Image (tube, rainbow, N blue to C red; front, side, top):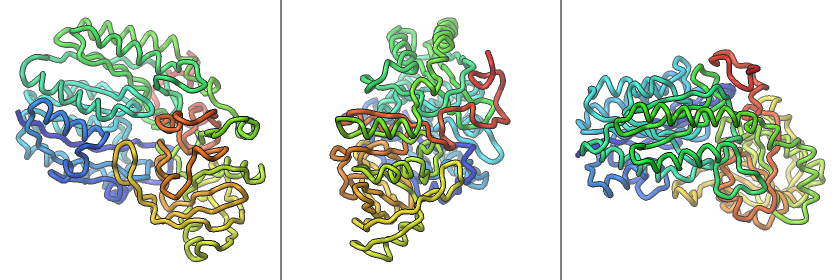
Length: 493
């Protein structure tokens, strides 16, 4: 049984005006054929899961093409997408496989297409015909559309946020593919789209949320997992959606796949959708966010450390530029306490490189990407560390390159300046330049919820800060032009 694997991965924030060019994918991850295996085997990624499943279930693996953007999250240029899609589809067509496993993020948007995942699935289906099964694995933040069900046989979404189950979902995709090829499963799917638009950071799904009542997405996912215990149910996916993509399909999506039981799929999806609607008010940002001023006051007053302050408006994984200065300025106004944070500012890094370790520099830091993320902050500091910014991501075991990186000591605050902003899902970026977050009083992360997978191990207090920015969970602050209405909480319902 020959199974082809491949995909294109990009979470597009349409409110980020900076376009994502092809170069971002080249500097992120772009691999063809056996290079996919050599780079992603034994990693905690979906593709790593596909590779692991092939060995586990006796599938002959045919790696085709995979691309994932680096640090840019604005709308993908059409030129870049056309290039990537052609690479993937050409490789899939030439694989002559018995089945196809695809990893597509689910929230990509290009300059000319508001549902690129549907376009890839449609063209893949046209290329291989109706008899070749296609299994799609996508991110929990995917904006699922009806077209996906038309062209894919099975749709599987992540079940955690932070995303700690990517490998497991890849393995699950391989298992379902094996079952289909052996005639053990004949998938039937149903989709429900509760009219709920959710901002990033409001979809946490962890087993033991720190200082939180069980979040609404946790309640939905708990029921989904329970439903999957039914023998006739193959998979239950609850996609929170990506509220920072201004497209008609944006919003929550629930997909239930059964083994040849359409009625059960429809009823199960409806039951979950009804629960989601009943929980809609629990997804409001006012339930979890606090202001910059209140957050800094609470952080400084905490008797225990470290305190994690999540910069919700500048979440780099969701489209934030990484140079927001609202919390940087708050630290300055607090006379530079024992804290650490990361700011992307290539010009500032260049100045520290010229000055050298031990030198005092005066800089205008951050705030270069638009006033919504704050103005540049004038500061003085001592250059403490210089680095090439390369390290190994501790969980997925992939290589991260932040570009030239420096650490500036301002009072007791260690300010990490980078050319590119790393995903701050764990302490890796800090550890790579000699900073142990466990020993700091305050740690600022430009992350919505992904940081929880690591930082909850040692955090004494987590504060989710309502900073302005293109990733604010408060979707009511954005001017949407393409949404399908009505949708909560944009519209009164």
